[in-house]
Length: 286
Image (tube, rainbow, N blue to C red; front, side):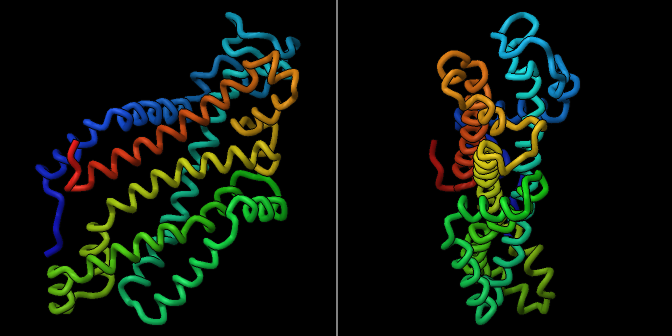
């Protein structure tokens, strides 16, 4: 029978995760990010697309983080931009993980020509400079949230597939997998009920790091004008609006909030990934 995570083991994993203080801090930031993304209309003090008469005003009681070049409230745009990051992160990882798990399971379990073909395709994908390739594809397809998710998801599956393949090669040698084969269980049942639960931990950790990477790439694309279409709020295009020397030197409220938010968000997902990796490792000692 496959090894299952019992309640006592789940408690140990939870306790190991809780002892990882950066991971707890990162989880708190991620929860705040999700709250801002879901309840943005109720949290934002102003319409993020409303053009006002006060241009590039410093933070005050009316505008907590000031206004941008056309009088829009920076704080409101910062909150609404969290929606873009959450959608891109979760959407990209969903696509890449789905493709990577399916192809990795097939390559690792069946081996042979299927393994060779899938891994060679993965090598080809990983040999290209990812950011440049994404920029080229985005320039051809045009900017848009759905296109970003699709491109990042398709280009992100090789890392997941290689991880899944390696885990499957190890797990399929276990006694419970061999017993399931000897008992005549179907391939689907063996893959998804006996193998998949035992490789879910590494896949979850990889997905966490993948979300951080997707948010960072989306911010870079939006900064370069190949990401989210204005006037939609994105942390990347907020930085684009503040790239003039005047803004960098004299108007820090235009670039520090989005830049700091990107930094905290990416660090938080990386910290949570580190915490999950240590918590799921039975040899972890903290």
